[in-house]
Length: 149
Ligand code: GDP
Ligand code: MG
View 1: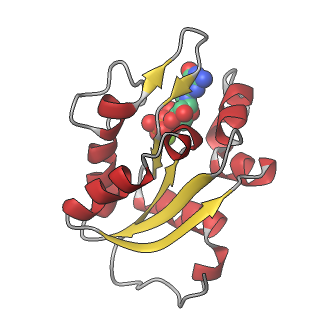
View 2: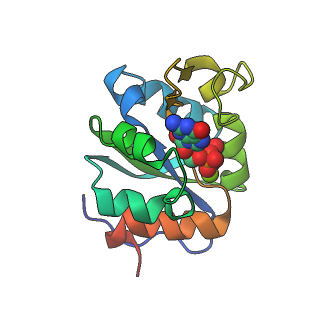
């Protein structure tokens, strides 16, 4: 999809609907929760993540013990990348997302309702959402370089 650059006067965040959610048919449900909250989908793409994209996206985690598992998970099938737009959307979508560990994430959040912790230590928490406006800008450039001027 080709489209013009994002409106610089509005806040944007980057979500990844992770491979487990893609396989389980949760794409529509997760996008619907964002839309029902009043946010707008500004860009949407089904992609197979590359090792380079993931190392850039998860730069803060590359050296951690779980990175190999995380990378395997994120490349286990296609995922959906989306730019979501709206006032205070970064904080708002993090609230919708819930805590990192699915077992502890609050019910009613996306991770609390759909995420799974597996006994092997694998975390399948169905969604990524940018944690700050600066992270959002950096991450949008990784997944939607055509949108960045
Ligand atoms: P987030 O901002 O809530 O997504 O959490 P973090 O930035 O701490 O971690 C990024 C992602 O790495 C998480 O969403 C998980 O998919 C994964 N992750 C974090 N901690 C672990 C862990 O201990 N084990 C595994 N396998 N994955 C993890
Ligand atoms: Mg994080």
